Image (cartoon, rainbow, N blue to C red; front, side):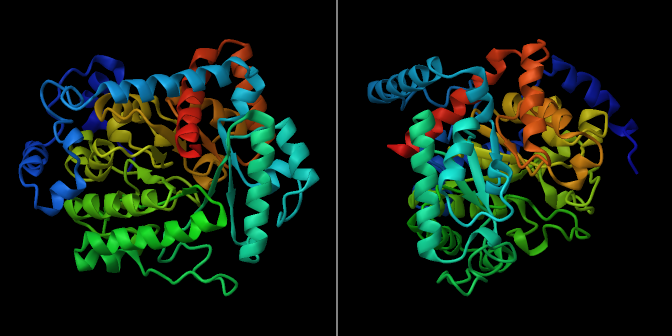
Length: 428
């Protein structure tokens, strides 16, 4: 089942860095993108901004007409602020920014429901890039607000920028609040049911509702929307979490939910690149793979990600699924230079933050130590490392890789610049 013979020619050419063609974007997609900029009244044109309507033109000159002097000024100011912060950061501080972990992994406390002196001291030692919270951390609105506010205060005191404070609130079957009787968040329903309506307004309303609730509590990031196309009918791990099996529908719905979150000040995280809907196995348990070739992915599973990138998506989560007919081996996409750098960065033109799926999942821990997985992910092109099984081992592993020259400090700086830039934008 893991044969790679069908993709060996593509692998040899693409992942060796010699791929020069630009025709992997389906002609149909190019035409629809171009048409959307002409039909101002259509649903597509409302979602695809004029700035990005030419993102996949032959010239690749999407920003030339609308990039103004004001844009340059804002960009230069942002770069200046990022540079000033980074000049005062040690390698250890920059490395800590690469991690999003649980409050328990940060503090060593069994179950964290408050942020006091223990949290402050932990942040002093490890000024991590972000924290992710689960149901055991969430007792009441007042408790969550105080915990998150204190955490942000400690981060600002320590490093001068906030943390990404995140949660998995997709709606549907993956929710931390809608099924918690202590919180007043109305369940928005399964994404599949919203997809069945065909209404992007319904998807945006779900994002608005979730985003408003999370922002009020003090969160600034949500691990949603699910941009997976349910292209494999035997898939169970995604199932009703997906908007559906039609990539054109999923791309519009995912973006609408993302824009709903964004309107409320919440950073959405597109997941799970390159598309978990094509698999049968569950990466929480162990090895999972897709047999799709790159051309097949571009024609289906990657369409929502391609569309999100064209419309300014800032964070994409990389799944642990293997893509042997693209990469030539069983390396999970989250640890694959071919998938993260050659495909996502170079082919799709993505410049935002790449965060891994949880590095404590079976697909990773069954094959790699925490240090190995962290180093491989950074070398592959990931910017942030989510929940390694052993945070301190992963952190020390990355530090050691820089010190012995396996990873350059410039590579660390590249990711930290992306992280700080997004934090500064949302902080202001």
